Image 1: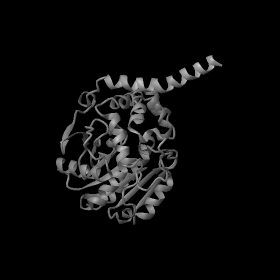
Image 2: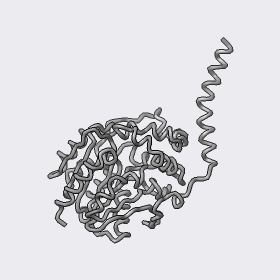
Image 3: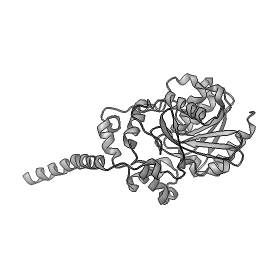
Image 4: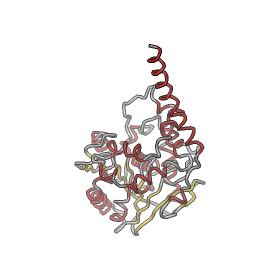
Length: 315
């Protein structure tokens, strides 16, 4: 009996202490430099934030906003096709990708929308179609609501906006900074990164086999403040992606395209229908055999939908 108690005690202590020790060790490892990692080396200061961006093509502008915690590579199957007829811009949001992740940034929908405006001003873009996926889509929505005079069109892809209805209790480790940090200390391992793919993709296998893509995510999670910024973002958004004033969604005036993966496990396709009902004159495209990152799983279908939408906009 005594031996069994000792064994159980050792197991419990290991479960508690080993993750803490892992977190402490990673805290001592120097972060990686975003400038050294980024492929194009294109950075610009936007409101004092060192911002990674990419630009291709010419014509009327289209801005592609990645998901929160994601990076511009998420658009790699879309940029070339869309830049054949448009000037395509994409950049990493503050707290994500290769951009700065300052503790002083508010990380709210409104602050992100203001950052998009400031990026446009910095780069000399007076008006643009703004598209985004996941949190990026919610930011695009907030931008269209806050700055309609600078929004030529809105593309929402598998995005939040309405309350999820999921309540995170105090026992959830994600809502506490320390336990969140301990969990995030494991985010630089390929096996952990690939473990999230079944929630992002309907078929995760092709992306799990993409060693360069997985390695890029792991490296980004080792840039300065990357793990803390993921917590700051979730806390600022109250661990939900609903905009602060949901009834405002009905006041969107920009031409709007809504694209959804039918098998999205993060934001149910019923949210797409709700957007379509609330935004007058909006178009809805639901794509089969695709999950939350429909623009990566079914890029040809997404590119066709966006191209058709852009061609119909009267500039």
